[in-house]
Amino acid sequence: MKFVTFEKSDRTVRSGVLLDSDLVIDMHEATNGKLPGNMIDFLEQSESNLTLAKGLLQLSYGDKGAYPLNQVRLIAPLPNPKSFRDFYAFEQHVKSARENRGLKMIPEWYQIPVFYFSNHLAIAGPEEEITKPVECKWLDFELEVACIIGKQGRNISAEEAEDYIFGYCILNDWSARDLQRQEMKVGLGPAKGKDFATSLGPWVVTKDEMDPLRSGKGFDISMRARINGSLLSEGNMKDIYYSFGEMIERASAGVTLYPGEIIGSGTVGTGCILELGTEVHRWLQPDDEVELEIDKLGVLRNSIIGVR
Image 1 (cartoon, one colour):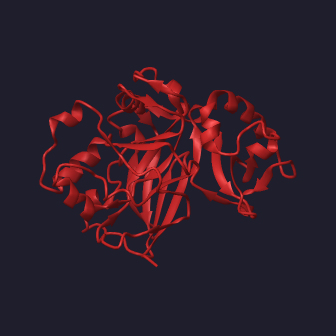
Image 2 (image 1 turned 60 degrees about the horizontal axis):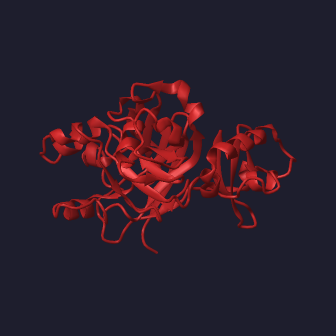
């Protein structure tokens, strides 16, 4: 199933199910209030709510709560996550990005999956404009997969982690590389270089739909990034070094994870300008359009603007 959050013509924001026929189902309206109208509340009881939501797959045009996709505006499928941890799980990206700065790989990276917390209150959705920070001259995108937590747990083993995953979507971890470089010299971060925007969407695909695509520690899904229509990055999620299970094990060690938290995979190999180098493409500027496409997960498109 594909879950979305959308704005209706009357500006009401609701969450629901996207059908293959380009039909969006308002799950709260269609079930007469039996299902909640937003994804955070839905995820609080995701297992029982998912069972009820499967009945919505039978709806069609004209049914209560059914809206043509072209009559609504998709926003981030989880516009208000409870937290956002972003990992660093693709070896090629880490190696290449460090080599470009004259650095060697550190052995600790192979010992534990590491992450940082980013701003979960700065989530953007598909087609939303991203404002380039005034002080940033090195604006970058990052091509990632996000995992959505759908069940509360603590000290979760990697083997058990699948039970705690609700689904997956595309994630763009926008980065002000010059701000990031400056602050990390101090020994903390990234923080200010990351906190202005993270794009999510266009929908969340439930984990059962992803299972047939499993390969290695990830999924056999191609990941591509285009800038202004030109292909810049191409990778595959199956090349990931740490599985989402291993990431969840690390994140939940001594800490409770709650439904509605986001886990980011980190950037796939070649999935950002920092890694490719500015000789391949300059840093992003206002009027650039960045399009991330991942098999099964759709297309996440955003345009850059300056401060207005």
